[in-house]
Image (cartoon, rainbow, N blue to C red; front, side, top):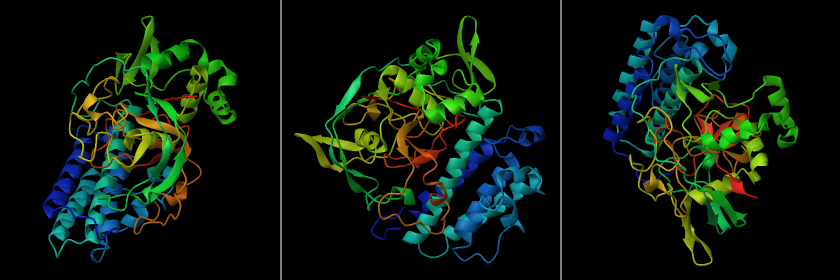
Length: 432
């Protein structure tokens, strides 16, 4: 929390709270009770548990620090605390039924809005509200990819994404000393983004767009999943164990490839970015193509650096296009469309070096393990956000079509295990 950062108006925070909750409820409104009771699987949670957890987060990380005397649901901490309730145990909990869960959510929602109107808005209070809303935004994206995993219908809205073709070629990045991480005047950052620190980045060339379905299909057709020499040791162990032979949700039909989009098979869109691939698949594709994944520093430099004579300037952009928050022309965010646009869409969102869709469409795997920046200090009250995951996950950048625009910036760091394929993740490559 930085006292020098300008605070949002209370009305803005109130609108965020209302809009985030409306979206969460919209994502489950059409599901019947049987669909809410999902089978035990590593990549999903019971929908009732996930809904209660969203409310619990406001309860424990916002209402309690702001003076609320007790949880708004007895035993909430024993039901919804994700760090004390093991994943597989969530299916055996005495969770409140749907009506009672929604009632708990409503009581927390009303208390959250009420607390916003009590007393002055200071930096700590604004931080807690932003943290709670953005946590709910993250779970909104999780609800979306859970529906994909479970083969449920696509959630609204159902608008088709733009088809704009391919965007081949590389952008040349001059390299230099780059400030990796968030600046201290950023309106809101998570602890793993703190703080900007100098890193030396040699000149490099990075693809203007993510790898497309057509490009990845060529790798599959060439037998890339069967070529041991293309895979790292861990990657080959994963591939051998799982039997993976193509991206998750792809299937052969009518002489070509189709993919499952929620509950519907659709023809593979050749110029959309490949999605639902894990880190090891991205790594193997790069080996086959004679390319490599960008490091986190290279990705962030390509997204946010400003050209200058002989290199880059000292400043950096908050978003690829500048410092203005995202609007519809910039990126495929906020689930405005149902799925990925073609990689040539959204030219207004280009970085200074001509890289497109560095925010939105698909998360992008980088070559960098998830570690803290120099001087890292865990943020209170959400001490478990980053620290438990350092060293065992890989960094992803840029957000996906279901990511909220208020959450994502050039410095935002997502982090997943390299085997995760259910998330909306793809990648772009660099020249070797």
